[in-house]
Length: 152
Image (cartoon, rainbow, N blue to C red; front, side):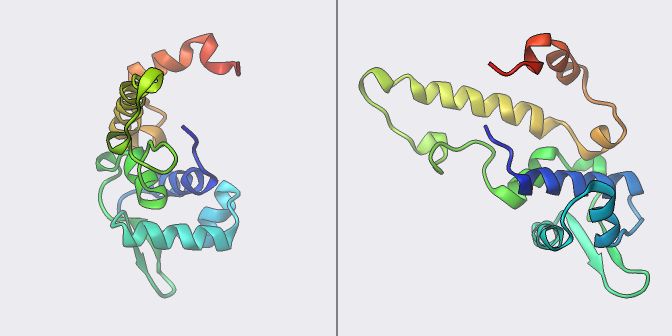
């Protein structure tokens, strides 16, 4: 799995909004500055998040962006899907739509298993948990394994 810059920036922007609180509005410039995201790129991402129903925007002096619903109800996966589509794909195709034969036949259940695990983590961890630095114990346990931090 590869996390695109677009998805990384979208999650970071959503976390800024989550940390600001459910009723607070932040200007795109403030989010871009806080997270070191190119402003023009962020504007497009915020537009996608708005069209995806995760962010609300308001114009004017007191305007800005805010989450469309509580941060505790928005999973990291929700944000990634809005800006990048499916969490796991193979050559741009969702695993259930694939077919293999011969010695590659068992790749399909492998890709499905990868998808299940990615969904389990990204689909269950919310913006509120990440913003509050309160990741679920299961995630912390996985990250505590020293091998998780090495690149083979």
